[in-house]
Image 1 (cartoon, one colour):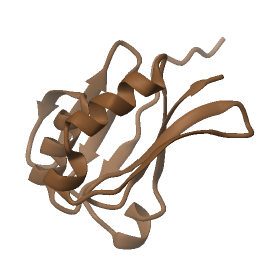
Image 2 (cartoon, one colour):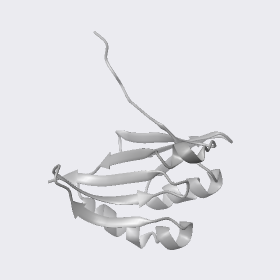
Image 3 (cartoon, one colour):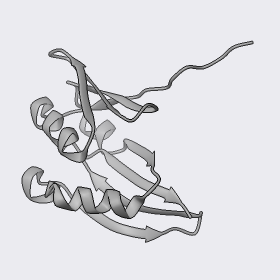
Length: 120
């Protein structure tokens, strides 16, 4: 029987250094890294690789979905980090969606859209 261990994606970065700072400010832990890739994680089961690679059309059509336990607490942390002011990004406040998730949206400095939500 085939078993999976983990699935990670490669998130593009227009400005690699700026994006690394952004994700740390968002609350992700920075792990291994070099000039081309940096591993970011949060908790035991959430991780991605930030890559020093950028294609505008790809980045602006890239969506990440992070399911969390307390979305309003995450929203407070995101606001406290002043991401809009520090990184020139855009945020959309939490909303209850008809598909049963309360979520907010964060655009990273490269245009990657993050949907951060919890089941309701």
